[in-house]
Image: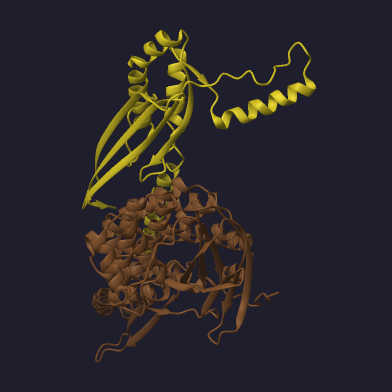
Length: 436
Length: 203
């Protein structure tokens, strides 16, 4: 009666190896898509993305990637449709799944549905808002600004750490309210952005952007919040600050630079003494993706202004993983123990079955390397007051040595007292475009 | 013998899987437009219908219609302005604005003129007629009816959430503003409150 059991187990293990053998980690299969993106072949990148098989658990990531590529291609309507689908899916997946949770204990972490890290969820709304702004639909952008608030509120319920507060999403929400003349709503978002920058500064180097200081001073002054205004004057050392008035307009230039870091698998293999089997531990680790652009400046009519970092996605992603790693490691260890016991039981009944169980255990132990890879590595911003009229804006992208890596030029139309946002995405291509 | 046994098992399993797959085609069933189907708790057709029904009732019962008729001796003419979406959801306001327009026109007590978006095309056509249509059928320019009132409004929301439960509160305000003196002649309001509870677990 021993034989059929052994056979069934062997067959089962073999089938498991067959089905899982072909599952490379999420981040390992990206090369071709990114080459197309860097070269500006967005249609080709979208075709490649569509051709990839998407298991249900990776569907949110697929939609986020698709939305970002559609945004890069300038198809803002389609991009928002994809973002909207991702939002609905995230909402549905947010409830704990029974089958997925048990699978993460038996197989690996990547078997659970991916719903995005807090910064990814916040930036989803930020990029959807930027899409609406690029379409000229400020009312819909305001809807996204409100959703930023709801999302971050919900995230803060589970985790009141700094990483559940997204500074850029808050800041952008404030700018959107101010664009619509809703100054008190804008101030609330600016304050929250200020708190978020200060909280993030405790984890990695980032300062409160000068532009945000300016916004806080301007709005507290205009809304007649004397005490708060004085407090900000003191905190920012701007004793001589005065309101710029409403005569001029303002342009906000955003540079979405580089690409978010990529998770790689780090594998540790252990051979326990006195047990003829191999135990492995696979953990994710972030690998930064270097961008040749390390700073930037805008030049308008002879005036020059540097761009300042408003969101360091590289650092936020790394810090998020660092905070998660203890739990990830604990789960991986628990799995290693469970797989070890399973293998030992199988080996005692049948040597070959034990070997197969061991190999299956090793192959199924994969790190969860999923993340929103088409996000930029950082967002930089400059805000300029300009007289009403049309202006030619030059954006110089500079290397760490200060040499110009690339230059982009575009026209902006400024209305009196108006505010417009201009986004530029940049990441290095194999053959970088030369500046004219 | 054992092998045959396993093979039979595998065959049965595959058959079960196939039967399961056969049920995967899309199923569509038609329902009445009045039937309430709340899926996600977001703004849906039912909310839109409730708002339009309420607004139509309030607008036609308002004293402003009779006041206008008494004072001017003709039916009031209304133009649809913008209904702002200040909510946290991407709401299509056109559905209930169109509902209101239809019901109010059909009541025979109020007249509507084409809104800013609609009239562009009409004017283009009129200009085209000027060149291409016969004298008898040509419609002259400068004969449009000027509206007496503009219909404007806004949707606002408040969301309160705690864990798996959320309360969504919608308030729709609509105004009729006199074009002559900016007086508000009618104000309508509809409030909707929903409690949305999320399941604790899924499979």
